[in-house]
Image (tube, rainbow, N blue to C red; front, side):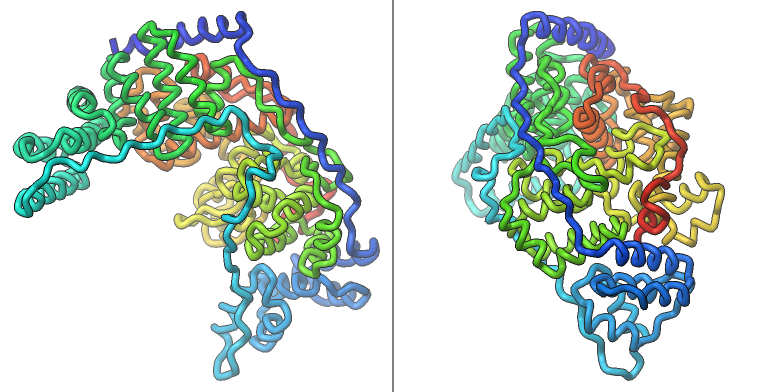
Length: 625
């Protein structure tokens, strides 16, 4: 029966999708708003822009005398803080003195990188007076944002979750009884933390008379979840059914694992109510959407087609999530098209913001010295430095002028800032801000599809070229130095880690790694396994395939990956891929495949190019600071 579920699901969902298409279930797409026409934005004169660009390129190579000759001819000194930062913090060609660092902090303490300069200055301070501290980066609250009043890009078909029921206060107990119950619950929790669900279960049955049905249900569901993680589906399903029978609402926190265990044991009838509980009481919109889609799967396999669309429509409350997009495809709804503009509109180097901005707000921004510095950096071709600087401005201001700052980031083609504003503003911001398509990627001559590369970058680094994880993964595509060394056949990358902050190198090596994973026999172009290997490593992928029983079911494969970080990663990058396909006006064959319970394969929809990042930007633009 267990193996039959995925086969029946695949066959029936195909029929279901055809039926929906035949009877025309779906909603007309909202008319996209006209994109904001990006006006020419310029601070530097053409001659100063050229000279600054030369300065950054010369200093990258340590040619200080030639750079000084160019600096002497510059009229507008607005970017000297960035010029001196590049020089003083050069990793190999310049050793900065304390007085240089002190003077830089005295004048440029509001710049990005000020904390790095301060740390180096303190190391070289000796007995001299302490330098000025960097201006604080106080993350201003976005709580005052009026989302209702700023509806551009708001998602449709939102579903409000049913409020959780307040737990029953239970019987009146003496102090001694309360202590006994607390001791039982603490001991059960300890056994579960230690990975001993068998001992937790024994203790529960021994103390069953002390606990109310709700308390027993919650503890049994937690124990069932632990058995599921230990691959003991028989125990997990048995305890899960018991928990659901005692008090379903009390099992809510672990109803997800209970539902998966019951499903994997071959019981679609028992799995549906567990998943429906998750759809109702899940802690996040993403989890509620997951419960709704899995409840629909269980209903369809069990022959209850009438409940399928009801469950799927609940998942539309998370429209940009993995399961929200799957539900949309299974309901036969059209792709999301409220992108408020398309990539590449506007003047060269500018993106379409899709957001109307008050002229007075934009005039005020252009008069702000910090914002003028950002625009000047773009004039000089320093997109990554500009993105860092504008993101710092947004962080310091919170939701103040967020709409104008986000539109400016889009007009200047600064994806990290667009994404930062888009995530914090949520549905009040255009969806395009949450899924930026920077022009520098179009110029990169990518070997793999833009949608896949963009989806990985968005999840890995949020377009921050200097991002670094606690494990040491670095750059746009978050490469480990050892992996980068293998891809480049240059083991010096193991200790010259700063090179991974160069976007051109990081993009090239990240794509090579993805392509290696795609061609491996153990993935064979399977997108789910490619992404699991990219996040968890190909060695772990091989072990997980041997140890996990996923019944040839793609969604069960994702949900039974042993590492929660990898499960989340695969789902979010797949959702990113699909949304970028929609933004770029492309088909999403991997979404269609997964909606029909087939394995999604990598398909090249863009013409392949050379794996090199060059073009109109020049070296230092792509390298960044």
